[in-house]
Length: 433
Ligand SMILES: Cc1ncc(COP(=O)(O)O)c(C=O)c1O
Image (cartoon, rainbow, N blue to C red; front, side):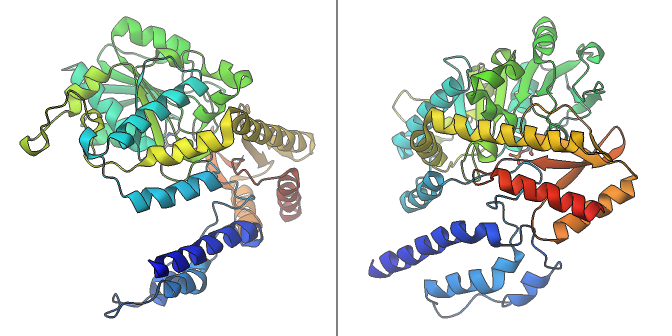
């Protein structure tokens, strides 16, 4: 164990110093495809190597091939933060190596997961008494929701969503042999409820905070339609859901309390290391109908339903420990402070773009994502994005809205300061010239 203590101290020192210097590293990895593979041996070593060799190669071989999601100037896709309590909890999760195949295999894993998701539901203003469990990703949550919806409405095989719904819905539908029916978005990129035909649908997926532009679908109207038609309503709030911790942002979440299932990714905007996707449902019996299959070797005498009966995986990681650590060590007020600061910084950036001749804002901003572009051709904007990312000073991504190439700046890292956002804007304007 002395090696473990010494190596552990070295790994923790590595992690702490990484977090201190990450702001100075090139945000987007600049390596060519295949570079890292070529730098690695073809075979695993025959003789044991010291852990120090792993740390050395992390620095010398792998580091150039890392895009730094922990960088304060990571603004691409949806920016994230693995906060310190979550990182430390991951270490403990690995040390404990709980495998939650059923309740008795780890009562604390299951019960902490249930309690932590009830805490999180409460923090986000979701109703009491929902079934809650943790999935690896929102994509898996989509499969869970659509499989339950399909089983609950035999003979109905259509999934209604918007043209802006995340591709994980299409993937889940394809896997479950359901037909996807995307309907157009309005001028703000929100789903047009008046276009939703639910007559042969088993599910409707509404999004609060779409991936392209963080648009908010009209969930109250869609919930009415779903209730009338007996259709399962899944609300995908993978990115934006964490913002409901702030009461002033709750109006965007109107109606989500009526959903049959809801997904929120704490690994996106709630300071939790990848992976941790919260899934709630008010129809746990329908989840069990779709997923419960208990073989003889897992039969037990105690009267407890294991979490493996509500979704696809049998074994589950002790993810609740890191979410619990994050909720406890930041507290409601700490989480609110981070989200509020990100929304403030996004609003500031939006204002700078709006006030600058030659630039335009391309979508209403609800949360911490700004969609904008240089007034000019798609090619100019695409080239600008490439130049900006090649500086290594920041990383932005793009989308297409109304057929046009649009730049996205998403704020979600707890270390991002006003100076970082200012620098991003300066680099954008400089490279545009
Ligand atoms: C709205 C939305 N839903 C689902 C997903 C998929 O998330 P995951 O990577 O957890 O599957 C994303 C990813 O960005 C998203 O933005």
